[in-house]
Image (cartoon, rainbow, N blue to C red):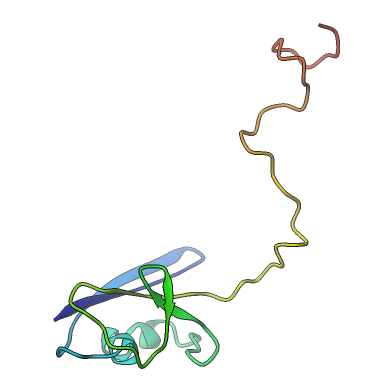
Length: 103
């Protein structure tokens, strides 16, 4: 069967295809892909993995066509990051196109 392994970090991303026997596991796919050689700092004991965005254990069996994803740890606490306004734009509320306060 063919599966793929995806990993991304600042400035680099890889999506590697792997041929493996039926019933192969997530861990086997990661090891066969060579991603651990390319990114030796990946720590499978700490980092979560998934298949198509759903968390999964390393010993889970894969199906043909699955995409294994190795997730990076969160580096910023989302509670401490200021919320961004959706839609961007300016801060004046008068919708007349200028930045002054007169209507």
